[in-house]
Image 1 (spheres, rainbow, N blue to C red):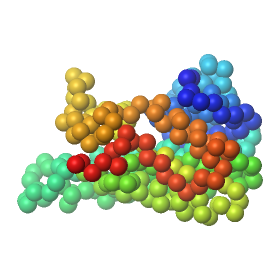
Image 2 (image 1 turned 90 degrees about the horizontal axis):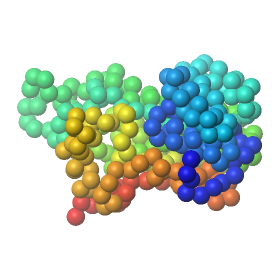
Image 3 (image 1 turned 180 degrees about the vertical axis):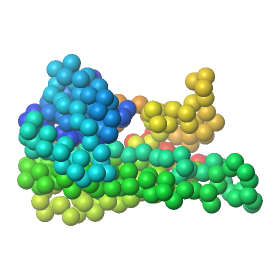
Image 4 (image 1 turned 45 degrees about the horizontal axis):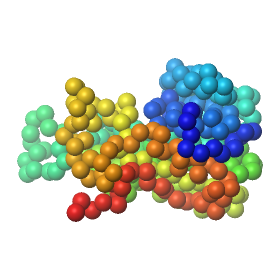
Length: 283
């Protein structure tokens, strides 16, 4: 993997949840390229194995593990496998998360009478169970892996937790109230954890990606013919750098936050990597 710069993670064990996804698989490969032994955790074992196999084929050290971030017993079993394979965890990257269509409105703005329109999902039609699922997946899906793996982290030198928040934790996006609120919770939790674990020397930070094309949002960002959707055109008009992000755009921030020398006094920060979206007022 072509890295923007190199850090030394030899002898370190990294656990990446959601590691079969587009962004987190890139994170896992970057950590492995710096010498870390990487445990790729994903609900889908084939996705975890695919990422791990790419790392292995490049000469790195990795294992794919099936794990459900909403089930503590599943995570405890994953920890057992990690310990037996690589030893105790030094780096926990909480990347598992996502949205649910039934926690999303069909329109950006409310128009009087929307709640009575057949076939239109308005704010009043949001499904509580789906909203709860989104909050659980993003917040509990960060809390539970932290509970399990932080038992190792607090006993390791230069250990760290890196959470994946979102730019919409800074500015909530239209149509996705559940996801925006859940990622805001991840950002707040990152700060709480940073304070809580500071006496143990455990640093906790987060990356907040802006708009990146992933498997989950392809249908929202692109038309069937591959051209940008109307929502993407709107996004790009509000992004000073004028483009969507690519996974490699996140690697420099990842490596900086994972380097105990470069960011030894950095904890409790949420770093937006969004092409200027969160800084732009629209004027």
